[in-house]
Image (cartoon, rainbow, N blue to C red; front, side, top):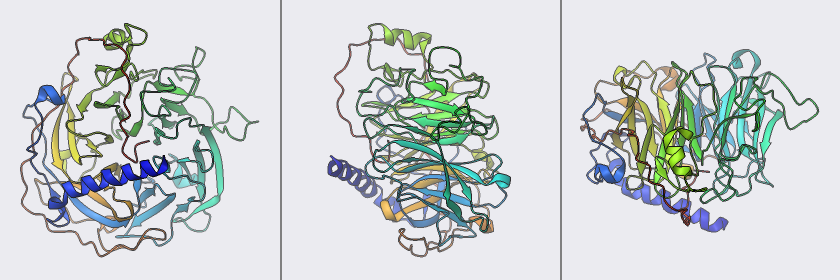
Length: 490
């Protein structure tokens, strides 16, 4: 089974690489490319309407990375970018290069075959004073999801103390995939944790709608307290306003009904929460939780897949979920345009004003990048901005709010900055200068990667998405078919 999954992973990346080879040959700057193969709107779930969407380009920052799955920053004033490699290392990019020593290397603790690995990283809101950060990884041996706290070393701000680990919580994984893996602090300073439904395919363990398991959920915990002092594997408190405190359901649950949330993010300005959820056979989706939410949203899986009935069990469930018993996604697309969503961020940087407020997301399989804008009436419109031609495993923000994404290509993965193509790119600051770098072992030493001069911009393809209210059309329970979720989608 492991060999089959590894082969699938290789085939997906190889296909995406070959399909985008002509783009990569243009140099180190990728500009917006009109897609000629977009399917009709009625088939794809997209509608076409001109809107205030920008054109974008990608600026190469550094190559030679190994399976990056999270890009983030510490918000400590250092300007450093932290690169999480699925193999178990966290690297630091600063002053134009990757530091030769990993910030943290826990590769001996991490199982990183198939859809497993070191998947998430979040820095404590008071990191600058306490040095605490949190990781989400798949544990070697039993395959359980582990969320653990570490601390920076006392003598070197660029190296963490590997002996400082404290388990926050663990979740057994019955199926070995759909791990989720995002850890992120909300504006309330609580830690949010995404966990998938635990197995392929079709929610076989029926976890997503079961409030007595963490699988298929978004959790919310207070890492500044400890409600379980006698349990070394539970070091957190339950926020008293969590939606299932005092009612049926596990107290840690914040939201339910997710399949495999691959990259969740908070808008650093508004506090709104975006949850991109990898679909099953047909539909990929983005869910949205406004900052004012009190939690308890049910995002519908596995009764629904996107805005569509998947498992009408018991009969009538689909109709109920489409008419108020679940929170419907704001965006979706079907597998004519891709097969595995990668969630991103709302752009809140200062370098490119025309990107301001645009939510970016992508497809891992096809390399399509979309931008989404919320309209005045609350609906969302989305447009394809770029056909990158490579597998996009994650987005990330630096301390200034500038946006990045990753070309996932095993030990030759590349970090790019997302830039506007409508104005000259500002001169990079010293902390973000895309100059030659070398990576620590086991990452191969990359070759020189200077930033290319911007080339003429091509107008982006227009394909905005809206989220109409669907007409309930329940269907019988399907026979789930085994679409392999492309690595690294747990």
